[in-house]
Length: 347
Ligand code: DAH
Image 1: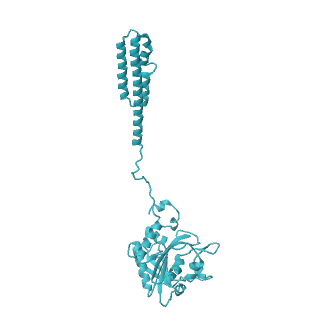
Image 2: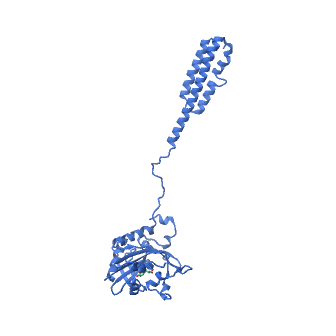
Image 3: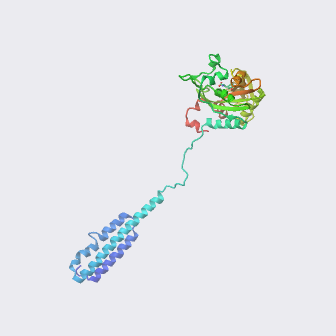
């Protein structure tokens, strides 16, 4: 070392500088950069070695080489720092590119929710009646004896009450057994013509099986005006069912008793499963009983302060579940309130 002249030593410094800068420029990794730094500036580096042996030089040379070597050290230290920052910045930039969340992309949803079949079909039924001029009135789910029974001509103690297995509250209210419970309110509210359908959950305190459920959706309907006839009722119901099932439906009336209508009866539809040929579901009759209906009893009109000598009308009530079961070939009414997603997602 001592023998090396100052020129050679300065040339060594130049070489250290160009070598180091070359390598720094190529490195892309922080660890590699750290290793290189130790090699170039560390205790065992050429540069340290030159600085260590500087004391052996004469004064002038010491000064010149000392100053150049220190400049180089500072210079290279800055280079390393700058490069470290560059690599870190690039890393961050890549992270923000690769891991960024694009908030403009639509969400990935494996399963979207569906509208419950009862709600879908309720809307469909309401829409059909609405287009026929009926307004939609929703029933109170809990009502009193007066509206659920007395105003529809079922006085206290009347044996007809046995037809409705009733849930009573402790204070004598009723989880409505039918949406006929709204008849009196609707008929009392305004002058005829009155056309309304009344959807609502209804409740029966009875054993459940594939065809009976403690809770079901009833759609009651009433039409009162001057000169309303039995034929109007048949025409209205036939039109509704044909629209609902999207095919021309035959209907059959057979007399039956409901205290709030006279005459009263049941409407049956051609069994859509066998097209009326007779199958197990329709018990080989070709017909399926689907709703109760009739001409509104004079007493019911009177209780709503309507004169039965001036006005007449008809009413009906059916369970929506029954209709959907037929339309969609569902074998058990208990599916509707089971909360079973497999069932619900089919619609
Ligand atoms: N409310 C009856 C029931 O739940 C159904 C019914 C039958 C309604 C005849 C009516 C009717 O309006 O006229 O069993």
